[in-house]
Image (tube, rainbow, N blue to C red):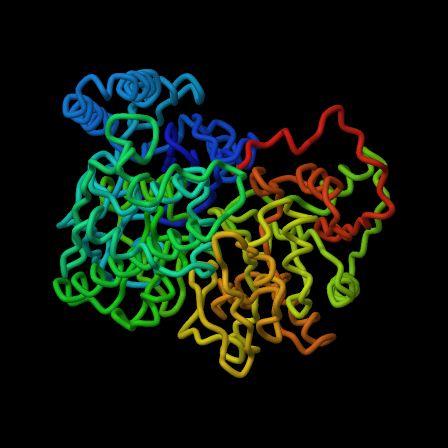
Length: 615
């Protein structure tokens, strides 16, 4: 019997909605893309409305609405944490309890008030947080059977869960519980290094190759006890998150040489080495856990989700180790993906609907192109309404030739094509593109386009069939979730600039040419790879093919279509606004081309750089 199910995640960060029909993902999107508030945690009304419209379904006709975690269990953790913290935890308890009692406990009322219906079940169903993560990883994967690993900050109680999936059944059989959390440990170092928690963890990962892991032993000796099976316990006396609204305490600061770096302050050798140290530990724990999971399940394949599963460097090491034959990671591995996992969990476990047998080598994520799309006529209506200078190039070959030529000349292109991506990565639908051969592309895109820290690396989108010519990567990486080393013959020897406490000059390292594709080569000769195939994204694949025909290079620099602190663009209006606020040269809105030098001057009443909260 056909089932149509709406999944919702909200009230912590990255609220989202997903619609599943008969086990097929119809639509999924984060609320931030519509509200334009990055990591928006609020009830995802805009994302829900998009999903219902995409599925041509009314709320009353939904077979079920399901929320991605269990608010009662979360409240239990908050109460027990407050009791353990005593008076020191009063402020934290008031804040957390107010949010839970004001929002999460009344999800039924929120859904009924927003949609006018709770669907045919007459009530909201509730998943467990890590079961939603597990479902988001297993059901869309290309595996009939697989081991399951979910790692994040915290769900209700669980922070790390081990399990297995078989057909439509998922079983989680082991977990590590709060306050012991690899995700919170990584976030503590994110905070201490001056980056924003639940947003800046990827910055810490990107900073790690600039440092040396000289604090690794101190972390192992004082902060965490790691066992051979990957299980661990934290010494919570070093942290602040149990009793306060900060991640680290005074003992943490004393251990690592003083107070935390202030946001936006210069990055010193200490931050680089702290990043390298906690990254090394994270990789160690994930590898130990994976080996243990392979041993106890006997499964050949692994699926992963949870915020820590977005650590591309650790993922790359895991794949390279060959512990499992194949690894599949949910592209929206964080809380947003919980909405999708919850919907799939209701489909297969609550309603007992069979899961379609996976097709060998093919997942059910549809490239993660699950968001809104805009037709050529909608784009034209937008640009004509505002009288923006443009040309329409309906012939695809002509259009791609123009765009590829611009890229080959070193121009930066905003690329808006097809359905928006679900998850934190731009995958060639809402992307800013550049020439990977140019040694100045990274600096130009960081400082003049993205307006962000110069050390942050860019990813290559490489033709799937040419990936092995450039990268040491076994298999595909369609969702930009794996770091892989460049092939040795592509690299160029680099002078390792010696940092000292008085001269932490990162640009001296960044600006050195490290390979024949320097714009995507990190300082450790690695790259965060996206493999692009013609079946999943034919337009993007064809563009890269055209660029290869002009230059001999089968890849493009691909970064998300946004500026720092802004969510990835969703609509043509979002894309145009971002385009004219930056120094991009060309904007491609489906088959409409807009050149920057032809556009009218931007007329804004206030500095747009103050519009977005820094990440």
